[in-house]
Amino acid sequence: MNSQIIFFILAAISILSALFVVFTKNPIYSVISLIVCFFSIAGHYIMLNAQFLAIVHIIVYAGAIMVLMLFTVMLLNLNKDSEPHKPLLYKIAAMISGGLMLLVLLASMRSAQLGPYSSPAYSESGFVQNVGMVLFTDFLLPFEMTSVLFIAAMIGAVVLAKKEVN
Amino acid sequence: MEPTVLQTNPQQWYLVLSTILFSIGVMGVLMRRNALIILMCVELMLNSVNLLLVSFSAYAGNSDGQVFVFFIMVVAAAEVAVGLALLVSIYRNLATTDIDVLSKLKW
Image (cartoon, rainbow over all chains, first blue to last red; front, side):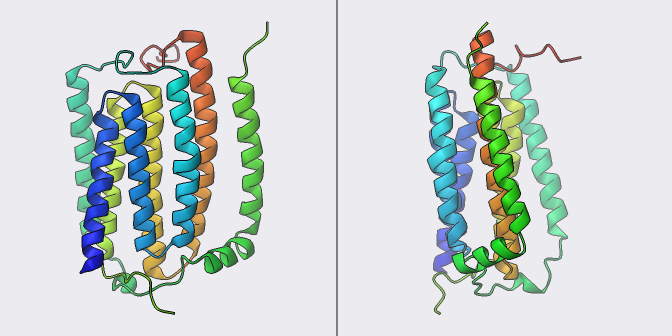
């Protein structure tokens, strides 16, 4: 019973803050409500016994990505006045198409058979030890390849953002 | 070991929640014109998929899904770094982040 209440509170926070990201005019408020959304998703991870991912999620998203976003918003001096507006027709069309997609996905999930594991059980699969074991045995090569990806992304970001000297 | 949090919620709830979050992300990408907000909505969509993968992994008692989520986070971090660098260089040239201005490649 308790975990249901926690689930609904976290779900309400994440959905409301996600809606606020989309609908608010000021980019700073968007960034901050996205941080709130990420924290509530980290709460969901803890509810699912995925402690490792919850910590990594907070460190990577709230700690690195959103700080980068916030820096960019402040660097470009984006505020409510510089925010471009779309016509109302586009907004309504976007809402209808998003809603239709939600409807189609939910309708297709209604008939999904979730298999024998749909009765909930206590699982240790999210503990650091188990995730680490899988990460460094079965997924060792992809894990090492991500370092190559990161170096490529880092060099790309530096090259793109560097001021051109002509 | 005693369970820290009992998983008594049906998994369908997580399916519905992540579908709603994904649809909000799609709606934001379609609705907003600021490229930065569009990047943030893409992040939201990635996160909803992450949540779904974690819930499947937890309910199946298998760690593989959480490793996938880890890799998705890596890709998201790289994507944000490159995307924001692109955005900064676009802003330096055009002094705007409005995607309707960036329509040279549009047919």
